[in-house]
Amino acid sequence: MTDLRTADVSIVAAQTDLIEPVVIPDTAMSWGAVAAGGFANAALTLLLMAFGAGMGFSAVSPWASSGVSATTFSVGTGLYFIVIAMLASTVGGYLAGRLRTRWTAVHTDEVYFRDTAHGFMSWACAVVVSAAVLGAAGSAIVSGVTAGLSQRGNADGGPAAIYVDELFRPAPTANTAAAPAAAATAPTTAPAAAATAPAATAATAATASPADRAEVSRLLLRSARDRSDLSAADRTYLAQLVSARTGLSQADADKRVTDVITEAKSDLDKARSAAAKLALWFTAALLAGALAASLAAIEGGQLRDRTAF
Picture 1 (cartoon, helix red, strand yellow):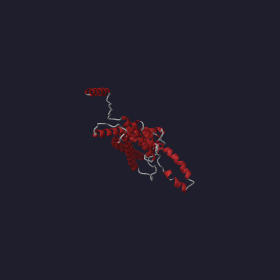
Picture 2: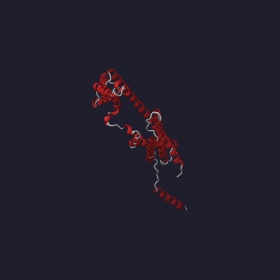
Picture 3: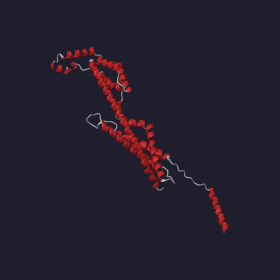
Picture 4: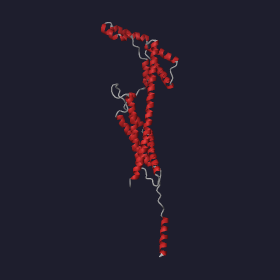
């Protein structure tokens, strides 16, 4: 009897040695889940950007008495950026945490850390995909409302064209100012006065040529690029050119040059401030998205572990 039991034990042991143990890989990162969450995040971001453009978050009303102010528009757009980042990142992070594989024999703190890493990596994947692939599409959506207003030809003179126009604007003359009154009081003499006014203006001033406009535009752009004032020689030359082309006196031409340069600097400073505020809002949106994705991945991972399959 004892010999039979010993033989059975030896047979079972031999059969056990022939069976290879099944080892389940316990990887710390499920890259498939991370990629799925990242692509979902990027897709939802594009969708919400299109919705925001349709709701008017990418352009202000051109009418002064309608719509919101520029400051309110800037704050509202920044807050919407944060809302987009939080909503899209929450969905992407939850998918990354819910779709990852279940870990066995891992401490609870390590599970929390890995879930957080899954959410953060899904957010990072979405940021990279959005910057590399969806950047052009997002820019087209945001700027599509005002694209028709911002497109200009090369003949306009570039970004300094409006300031060049202000510099070479013809000076108002006494003949043109008194033309309506003369037409009302003396209809017979008005045509003669109107006929002599252009001749007098043409005798004292000549229209600015394209070469003059291009030269002035280069001077203004160089001053803006170097963040410096025009030199004394350039300012004097510019005032003389404006006086010769518009019929203004030298003092009035110098005052116009000063006013236009001050206006250009003020506009550049406003543009710089707006760009800085937009960058800060964008940074806040990215940080909010990273936090939302990490927390959502923790929730999705915990629900994955509690669900029995």
